[in-house]
Amino acid sequence: MVDTEAFREFKEGLTLLRSDYPTKALPHMRRAVELEKNNAYYMSYLGVILARAEEKWAEAEQLCDSAVRMKRSQAQLYLNLAEVYAQAGRREDAKETLETGLKFARRDVRLNMALHRMTERRPPVLGFLSRQHPVNRQLGILRHQTLRIFNQ
Image 1: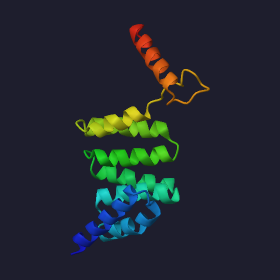
Image 2: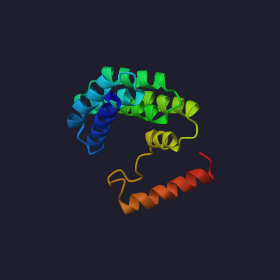
Image 3: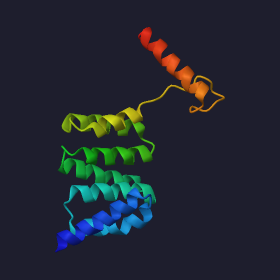
């Protein structure tokens, strides 16, 4: 009975989090963690919600890190910890977390995608235009191809 109630609270909290309502998700996730204290996923998502809703970086990091230590082979837990680091402005720690996750959960493509999104991009070719401007996009493609030809 307790497990199903905890899972219901987790699902409700996750739905609210994905709908971008972290403040509303917080009580549901706290309740899920109270009911099932040793569930790594509940702890990890509570950390993400705390980071988004209340910017409690240290507590969020501690929860997510504990969850990773409980289940090292679960890619989602690394993604959650990296998200907390990124929101706290610690991009290097987020990258390191994703790289560590690749060692333990090698076949999960989400880690590669997240790591790719974290890499630094070159500035737009024409700084006075937005990155999405068609001229900048075409010049950027040309620059990329030219650099690839010259192996730089």
